[in-house]
Length: 102
Image (spheres, helix red, strand yellow):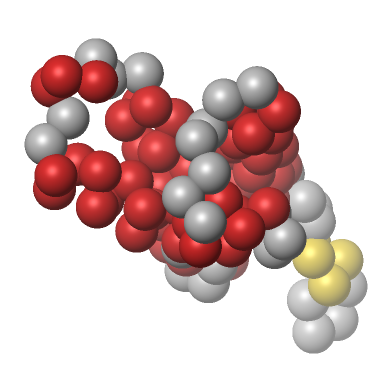
């Protein structure tokens, strides 16, 4: 992500072939990571916390929103790729570049 995304945005590389496969793999990976964070225990002040409600609450109040924004932009860029080319406006193309840059 940290190498290919800036490259594709800077030189407006078409998202096809390897880049399309990488975009899908990246979206799936980060989606699974987001889900896994709801199930990953953490070290509390006295002991390891394994209660799923406490884990979900801690994650929801900390990194969930930034993670959701990143995963959401990944899936938005994938969805925009599959829009018919004629239905994309200049704004949609600009949004795709913005999304891929985040």
